[in-house]
Length: 160
Image (tube, rainbow, N blue to C red; front, top):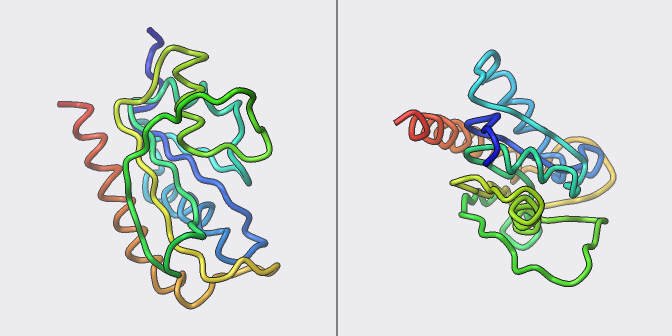
């Protein structure tokens, strides 16, 4: 069994130059300020999730994946559990989702976080420009609050 490096890993993806796709990096920057100096929380932000992140996930007690969602209402904030995906032959490395990363962490390192969650904000626009749509801008306080409450609950539960 591996030693756990982080009690709570925040793992965001998105492109700030594609309007609402930048909500993941924005929330991670917010969390970096909020949890500055808190060794229980680790943060990683990428434009897209890649297989190399499986080790960080395997070493975490809990993980919160943060991303925009294109399949929901613009500005809708959701927090849902993530289960490891059933292994499929071959691995597409262009875009790896949260479920696939969990599977990789289990397959490659024999470990997965006890708790895995996905926090999403519904995208209203993915145009080539910086900033957010009105719906996502309005959802940022709710998403930030939910992220904060969830991190605090997860680190408290890991100490119990």
